[in-house]
Image 1 (cartoon, rainbow, N blue to C red):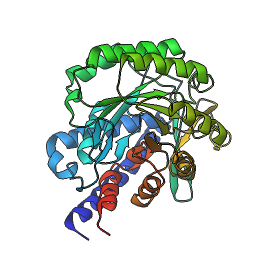
Image 2: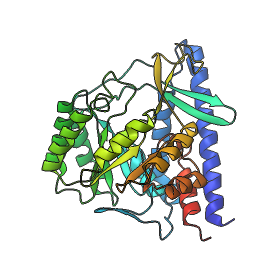
Image 3: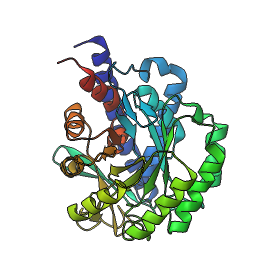
Length: 359
């Protein structure tokens, strides 16, 4: 084992150990205070802790080279690695850090027109099965709103990252999707050389998060309107719960548009009761489950879509090099990552080295 692999393994172990200690600490604190345990507080603590470590020792802990020969070109976008972040992380410093660790591109958390608080807490929970850890979330797309978001990324200079960036657009109506797109287009066109759009039609945690997936004609009209205003690459983010028949119909529709692909997919629907959680552990009645259990469905969708020529992103359950290679062999162009980055971001250099190894 090379020195770099040993370092990655040790950093990975240290991260997972520290994360587990933080969860235990916050659980004890919640018992003492009489409040509910909120996993989001652990996530916020982890983001701040990693940011401080990044500030003082970035070269040691976070700068990893991407092996040669892993570049992916999708139209005018060039990704140095097929790994990208899925549209879930609101902490922009984490996105920059993951890019340094070896992501080929990043995707911002889904952006809505107005500020949203999301659902009541606790709305994020860990669920364990055997040796696996999954996340059940019903965040409800909390966020700062598109105007505040654009102000923040411009002032923080994140738009200067040397990698493609994805802007995930959400909405409660076709009009809101279009408003958010136009706000981003007006502000950023000409300022960023490499970026793409994602139309999120698959969020299970908002009242109207799947409105466009249930209205294909409305989605087609939205895509036609966007395409008249921008030639940027667009990905449609679909749910793994979508039937195979509906996926084929969606693929046929997407195939008729230029520079549009499919991102499969998102979390899978589960109720709190099915996951064995109490209301004190998880306030909403239902949410979206993510983690390695999604892999088989993600791989199945890639095989299903392989005959179509449009670009594809495989998102869901991919946390090892072996799984990454499997979806790439099945036709994926890029790999979206979310839960794996939360549980252990050092999976990024691990997977890159696996994919970049010489047989």
